[in-house]
Structures are given as C-alpha cells and as structure tokens.
Image (cartoon, rainbow over all chains, first blue to last red; front, side, top):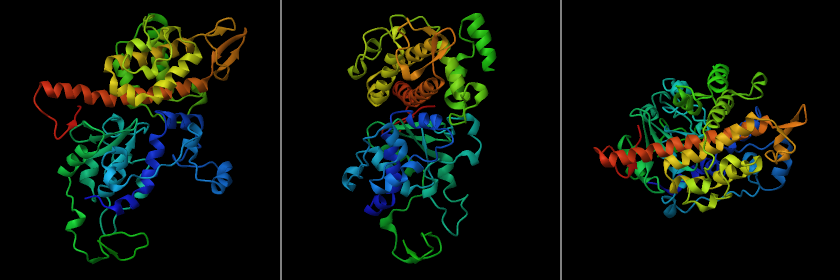
Length: 216
Length: 205
C-alpha cells in the first residue's frame, strides 16, 4: 500500500511534524504567547536570522529558539517506517488527505473543543492545509467529506490519536505503530490501492502542480 | 465571571466552587489558548487567567508532604528534589516542571492517572501559592532573578511572562493527561464490560 513516492511527497509534512515532536510539551504555545503576533508557522524564520539561515543550514526558528541543537532527521527507510507512528503519519496523510491533523495546542480541536463542534468552517487544520489541494473537477466540499466529518488525527505530546468525530471517541494504538488506527480508518474509507490502478492518462480528476496531464 | 469566582470562592469562602470540574473542562477545551493577550487582563488572555485562577484554587489544597518521588516512583528521571512540592522555591518549581516536560512520555507511560494528576496539580498549586504572594528579599522563595520583578516596599513578585509561560505548559500537560488517560480508563472498562474496541485500539467516550 505504501510506496516510496509516498515518502517523497510527504517530506514537507514529515519535516514539519518532526519539528513539533522535538519541542517539549507546550513550548510552541509558550513561543506564541511570548512573541504574540509574530508566530506564523512552526518552521518560520525571523527576518533578522534570514541571512544567517541562507548562509548556513536551514534552522526553523521556533524549534531553534527552544532547542538550539535541533538537527533535522531523515525519514526512515520504507521497511522501518511502519514501526514508528510519527514516521508513518505523513505517508498515511498522503493516502487520506481529507483527514485533518491537529496538534495538542490547537485552539479548535473537533469534538474535544465543544464550541467548535458544529462549525465546519472551524475544522481547519492549522498546518497541513497548505499541502492539500482540492482535486480539479470535483466539488471540494464533497471530496472526502465523509472522512473529514468522521475522523481527525490528534498529535498530543508526540503520541498519535485518531478522533472519531461521529462516535465521540478517541482511538489510540496499543503499541508504537499506527497500524491499528489505519486499519480502523480504512474500514471506514473507500480506498483504492495503487496496485489496482490501471496506468492510463488522466487529465480530468487529478490535480498536478501546474495542470499537466498526470498518470495514475 | 473570573472576577466573581476570585472574590466569592477564593477570597470569601476560601474553597473551590461547586462547578470546579466544569471550570477545569472549560479551561482545557473551551478557552482560546492562542488568543492575543490583553493589557486590561494583565497581559494575559482568558486561558491564562482561568489557569491562574485554577492554580490559586489548587493552592488551597493542604498537601504539605507531597513529593514527586512519592507520586511518580517508577520514573526516577524526574526525582530532582526530595523536599515536598509545597516547599519548592521558584527555581526548583521551574526546574521540576521542565524536567517533567522533557520526560513527559515516560511519565505518562509508567504512571497511574491519579498520581500524575496529583503531581501536576501539586506543582500548579505551588505556582498559585507563589503567584499570590509578594516576598521580601529575606525570603528565599523567589530565587530566580530572571522571573521576578520588584514592587513598592522592597518586595518581589513573579513576572507576568513567567506566569504565562507556566500556565501554557500546565495547559498542554493537562490536555495530554486528559486525552491519554481517557483512553486508558476506557480500556479498563472495556476489559470488564462488553467489548467496544477493535484490532488493538483503545477507546474513550
């Protein structure tokens, strides 16, 4: 089910995720409070450090502020990825991009934060939306609406939970893997494995970066 | 609402209000934790204010002998001090909370819910106790210069920045306890009662 191209396409999210899990609990919220109005993204770099950043290695400001020794870790090989939930989640997010991801310091976590429970507009992930584009030729609201309404990921102090928004339940894996949660997700999703795809030109229902014809 | 709670329950009755559990839930899940701070609220937002008020209420609990090593015996990494939490200085409180943060996954994995909750509430109560008082230079409580400021009569109090920082950390730690141990408690219920789990998952409602 998971292929090497899932690793490549999920690296942006993986890099962001590892910055989050390398922070001590609550430290992003502390940063946002202490530097109110200046926070935009976990990987932001301040303007004063921009020249330094380009002259040297890329240093995410929030992580660097709290952990100066932070060094970006490479993604695991495909065979080892499934042993770590944090490493697996970006790949699973490629398979189910409609399931939003929330962090423990997000102010609007569906089902847990009651005020926003019935407000679909508030169900926006703070972080991964920019990586998920609606597919051309489909109604964005309808695409994946079923999964988006039913499930969401919650990353809480480096552990991954699956929120069942309909059943009002929180699911956690018994081990360090994401496998039981993915099984639960797949049982509720219409999922087509890549192996079942016929290789054919398709320009109608797939979105590419610049509108090129793509192969599925 | 917060002002009424402070005046009625804390100052007048010196007891937790009847809706104390609801207040906790409101703090953890009902407040906007990233709302801008307001000057009128002492450079805090609603989450900070409610959290601070809860720390004042936790300071009412009389647990003079509570120690971290006694509550979390299976996590020696976080046993920094043998003294009771109620006797922590500002620096010791800060260091202990930072230590818990760094070992938080280990604490959650090897400890029971009541003990983790009590340890966190004890530390939060100590924060509330320190935050409520002004100390003179002869007191050794405020021993970290970077987190204190002077007030008239040559007394010292902790800074707002420090309070905001600590409340934010407690906020996330309590959120993780709520999510994590909700699942564990339900797992125990699931084993005793009808099965509602599937394929290695735990559930909470």
